[in-house]
Length: 110
Length: 468
Picture 1 (cartoon, helix red, strand yellow):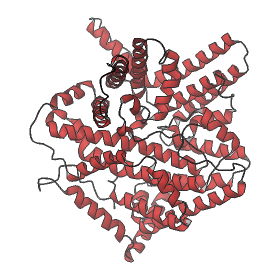
Picture 2 (picture 1 turned 90 degrees about the vertical axis):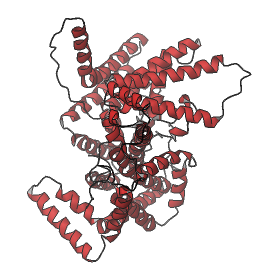
Picture 3 (picture 1 turned 90 degrees about the horizontal axis):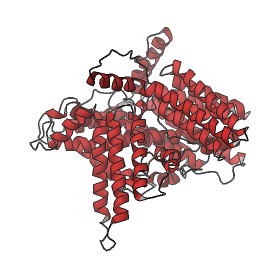
Picture 4 (picture 1 turned 180 degrees about the vertical axis):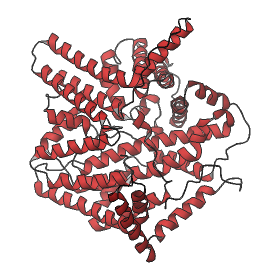
């Protein structure tokens, strides 16, 4: 095997250890996905709104928009907005205290 | 379907669940991965899935024929036929238009101007990667390094979505035995996989995208409109951008494969801390440089023979390596620069007066980095003429016209500083992360992704290496 950063299992035939590792990975991915579903609902709304407007996609966009609005009422979109605004301010800074160059300030993500 | 998009995220969530629910029968799991890979590839253009399948069947058939043939002469003929077939695919889809343009220009120059029937051939995404993968499999079977694999394993080797579009070029000898043994995953490997995906997401979405849109693209679009300070900043910016962009894809590919139970080889190893160009090629796109070494440079004669013969081999290898990136003279020049400097290093090593002290490492590091940057100018410029404009502008000393922003400067500094960090840092972090409870690491990963997503500009640019 070429040089790889991924560690090999000590015992490749140990199915119990593999099962534990899969459960661990699934929990990590699942928790991260739920966290993003709650705190990054804006991304879900933007993504669904950009899909081709079929009946199903329009319905999905409506649900994603409603979900985002509900969470926004509880202020759960605030961390994302805060980070984004701070980054936009940093992006607009110039060495000469002048206007930021064209194209340097991208559009807001949500 | 780009890695840093929600569409891909949902695709991967579904595949991850399905792949670990259907671990047995093992063949079914691989069929699921194969079909998912075709869906992933078909998201660009369904027509090219056929090409991928044909290429897989071709290499499977050729390898099988080689393994069942005893006569060395016939085996040699078969491997030549198989490699030629792979190269034909590459030439038709990648070099056909370029070849006819050059012939047409040549005829015009000789006064025999003709309108040649130039057909526009659409370049299939990742064609250079999967044809090189097919060739390496075939040659390895011919050399006896690997037994001929089943049709399922060969098609999955070539189609596996994680490396399909932009590498790493995973050899059959590395991946086929893993398909045979079945998926392997450890807690540490899963933690590292997640971290590599998050880290890749940051490098692509923030570092590479910001530098591209804020600095590199505007300057390279019209170098004649900019003065030396902007051009220098854009050169360093591109050096960081291409590293962040390409290594991000490799990191995410390695991480995604790890979560599905497969180990991919390392493809980058802090390339800008290289102290010679030879060292650079041990750290940059390692899977391509080792491919070129094993299947081109060594068969040409490699490091054996006189120093001039070795220089010839280096030149051929790097010019062809440059053209692998694309059918354009600028890529050939990029290869020539690397070939010439590698040859100079060889000649210097051979003829250097023994009493002369070796140059300090910090100096050779700076020189190597700037040689790489010079070659990047040709690589990034739209064409050869633009690259020459760019180089001419480096002598135009006047105040900056673009006003390099503090953010661009900070991102360049950060991108270069990454090369001064301890080697294997992310692997060390993963060891610590794996000690955390799963829920805590999941929350951390979620928070990091939220942070990255809030920073990135809207929309995702395709990875630079997709066009190769």
